[in-house]
Amino acid sequence: MSALGVVASGPAADAIASAVPALVEARFASKLFAQDATLWGEEAESESAIRLSWVNLARTSRPLLGEIAALRDQLRGEGVDRVVLCGMGGSSLAPEVICATAGVDLVVLDSSQPDMVRSAIVDLERTVVVVSSKSGSTVETDSQRRAFRAAFEDKGIDPTTRIVVVTDPGSPLDEESRAGGYRVINADPNVGGRYSALTAFGLVPSGLAGADIEALLDDAEAVADVLSADDDGNPGLRLGAAMAGTSPLRDKLVLVDDGSGIVGFPDWAEQLIAESTGKQGTGILPVVVGSTSDPEAASPDADVSVVRLTGDDDDTESSDEVVHADRSEVAVSGPLGAQLLLWEVATAAAGRLLGINPFDQPDVESAKKAARTLLDQGMGSSDAPAATDGAVEIRALGGNWLGGATTVPQALEALFGQLDTDRGYVAVMAYLDRLADADLASVRSGLARRTHRPVTFGWGPRFLHSTGQFHKGGPATGVYLQVTTAPHEDLAVPGREFSFGDFVAAQAAGDAQVLAEHHRPVLQLHLTDHDAGLAQVREALAAPAAEGTDAKGSA
Image (tube, rainbow, N blue to C red; front, side):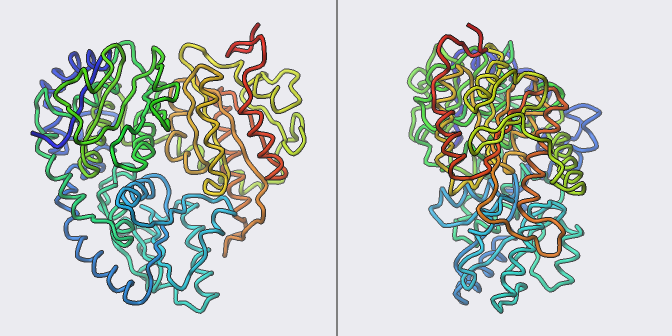
């Protein structure tokens, strides 16, 4: 019996019954593991042809184990036991889950917010930095690398002994780093970032931090045969069908941990699913919730399916005990390594069912381009606020919907008044220090109760490599709340004309601009004073809906 369990009920079970036989008949699973690039249609073929090596990583990544272990022993022998990972999207989310589940420390720097960057550049005497980027062109990661290199040099530490680069072979970062004397570990170039958990991108930082990465590969390899089988019981096909085969499509997928023992897994799955499927006006929006009592999980709407991540000891043979029979629900169980491969297979299958290419991310690129343009123009040219309420500047994009709102509570009511009460969702996008300001995320469940719709919460710029693709490429059913701040203190990017503060401001403005171009309503709340403004915003978000209004703001 497989180490994986996928048990479904309601419309999710109906989707499995209707969609899986066609996937089996098409030999989708065996062709996927044979790296058949034709599975997603002619338009996707060129991209798919260079993105499918992830199916064999449980075996092909084995040679990395010895190199990583030797490097870890060397560093520990030199008193270097603090690992910082500079990376975005798939380069950071998988190691974060792997290390948190293993109970080992890893500092993940996936931000350009200057206060957060500064807080990571400490304890340099005992720090090794892993710089992860497929091409090296990711501006966040390049800026972080420059900041750490300068900090090491200021401390009299040779940065070539403390910075480890993970990148594709032959990339500009690969060539520059080798020429500069840095240690470089190459990743498989035929794997996209969000499918890279079992490549060097996932294994190097996790192994250096002390996670058992060999066990991770063992767990993935143990389920490879069942996931590649053209069989109705294939858990990858079952999960993919439950995700994308409901009719009508339930395009919100609530992800909630329910005793899996895997720490933070929904955040990794969120990026995989949203960035892979949210395009061409369709897709699956993952909604990460903190508890089974959160409204989206406890009382799901008609456009929602719920995935509960359960423990291995749950009785997956008795579906009535695992899932609620009257809901569109899926219970998924299995060890981390196995689930990484399971969800990748399921997402690839979901892409086929949706008729999209699960390996590109066109709208992520559009936001990056807008940010670069704004950086080149200079950030002093931003539009004047529509109103200022205390320590918060209010701006509205994507239509003339703000009305006469002049306060933060009024602006929120105006934004929520644009919400489709049947299919809509609210996205909170906070360009703040996700560690120091972590408690802001607690407003998510209250907003879901207030609006009676699913609510996502993303830290910027981290979410740009995740739900950011869905926001712009998926269905036009969202309303978007963006929170930005003046940093406590800005931080220069060595060798660049812009600072980290300039860059994160450009990222936020660029994303809002592209959303507006896609006719999405965006409310920007900029904190001119971080502490005072954040208190204002938190209070307004925690408040109930204005008396006498529904989610659309009408009496």
